[in-house]
Image 1 (cartoon, rainbow, N blue to C red):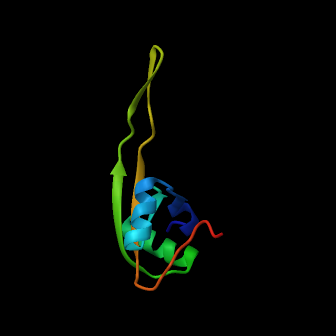
Image 2: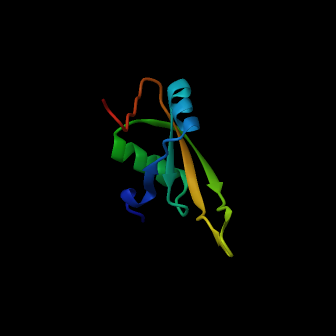
Length: 95
């Protein structure tokens, strides 16, 4: 069994992530690549104390990057789009 704090890595603050947060009440997170939807849902509900309606995951492959003569690769990562139930709200940055 995984520890819930190992499932969620960090929130993703991108333009697309902020747009879906405002319009559709969804949150974009980077998660552990080995975790599944059930583990992600349980971790979000326990850590942030909100009700989750749906979890969608995206596996993103790393891109090839070139630094002078050497070639490298950015790491692979897994993203999760968390749909919150109606009436729930999650703010990472509170004013």
